[in-house]
Length: 105
Image 1: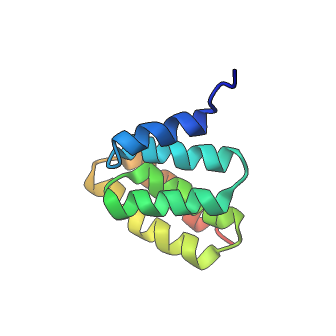
Image 2 (image 1 turned 60 degrees about the vertical axis):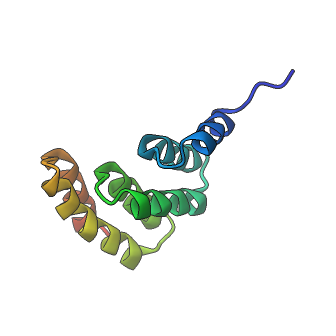
């Protein structure tokens, strides 16, 4: 009997709840943890298209884009994410994104 992977479990839950931002974030993070930053970015972008006020997705998308060497894209995501975090009152997320933005090369 094959146990389902965490990614498979999340994908099944998303089939039942496609608008669940936390599940989309978890799926993107599973891809990032597996070293598949291209898929992670696609998942983060889909999440942000559905839920534009989810600060952790901006931060992690920026990190994945940075790892892919897509610096201009990372900068653009972070520049959208900082005000989104501030609008939600999430100073911590805004600060982390500002720090990442300042260190992009």
